[in-house]
Length: 246
Image 1 (tube, rainbow, N blue to C red):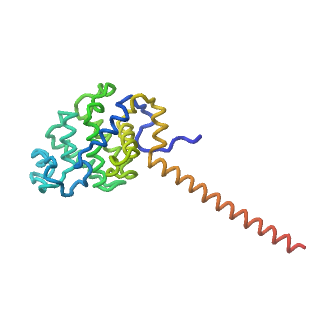
Image 2: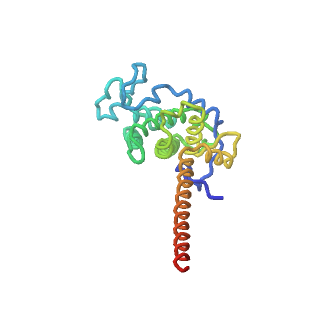
Image 3: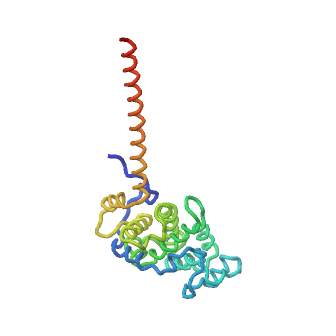
């Protein structure tokens, strides 16, 4: 049996630990505020949470973002301050978040920003960030904030290109895939599952892995077709040679 296809969401040298239930994370994704799903930078309703002044200043060099527009990096940085209070109103931390959110490798900036906003919404659930198995992480940049940033980055480059964040809350299947992806990226697996069973289920629900499998099957079919054509040509040549020797 071949090894599981790499998905970029889990360091194979690091085992996952038990986290919250899958149902609770799926419910959290389903309950994401509409503003979390909008394209960052697009006009949003006036009820959208405003970007705090401190974040706006640090994000734009003292120039507040246009009214009615989402600054995804500021939203994420302010949200992560709940997890790591030492990062609150830190210009350097916001700069790190902005670099992470707007990075253009593998995925568009808007798509990556949507992934970051939705992922941090999940991480802010106490059932996730306050799980007992993460108690060893201290509330500093190198502790919980580092864990959160690593999770955001991993989800942004590994899941978002395969499954658009706009789709995450929409169906049971996409909620399960995004929930499992976020848990894997954060080093957790669902409660009441073993690391092995969670990994096996992930191989089944992952869009990226299924695409990888289908691509491999298509390549095998292509090679089989090429081989069949070569064999057919060989048989035709052999038949022609036999006829010419009669």
